Image (tube, rainbow, N blue to C red; front, side, top):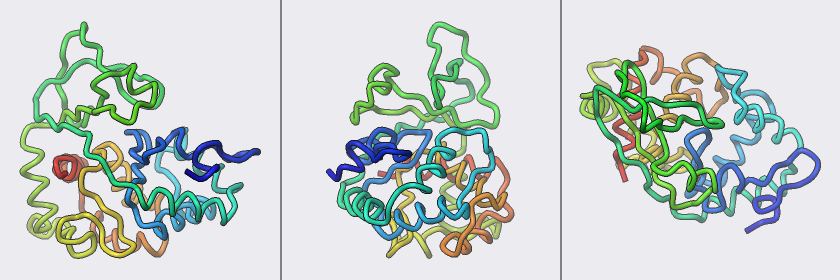
Length: 241
């Protein structure tokens, strides 16, 4: 493990493994890096540095930290971290549950956590992604598993959108992300990703907060998507191992 992943660099560069975990599994508030192409990871750092990759919700701390970190990280450290994470095997840790009602939740740091003693509530137009065990999650245990509660029917609807484009609402994902959606060349894998993360990226691209030459092909993909579509796509992708 490179020093920048384990310890970071002072000033301004946090240890990559603190947020994204040493095995690259990531957490719902950020990205899973394990198995992504090294060149893709380096390009994202460059986009954060140039402000090409921003967020539609500027108050969110995780992307703000990435933007700040990218200003200070050296090309050498970026390359070392990217090479390290690209060699790791992604792990599937999400259970998708279609439901009309969900546990009441509260904000814990940068995620939602379930209040098991509180009454359940309607899910509405939401994905509620919570760790099975909050304490295990906060200790950054790489074996933490997550429950993703999604609206009833989301997975089937999302499958149609992902595979066929859903009657011209979008474009089929396999053309760029590969037949099994596990990535193609420098295009990242989207199979088995946190649905919270996927929705944020679709929304950021649609709102033009996330741009750049490598994101340009996605602008047509997200152009006509509404929130229900984004939830459905993210729900289906999260079921894929």
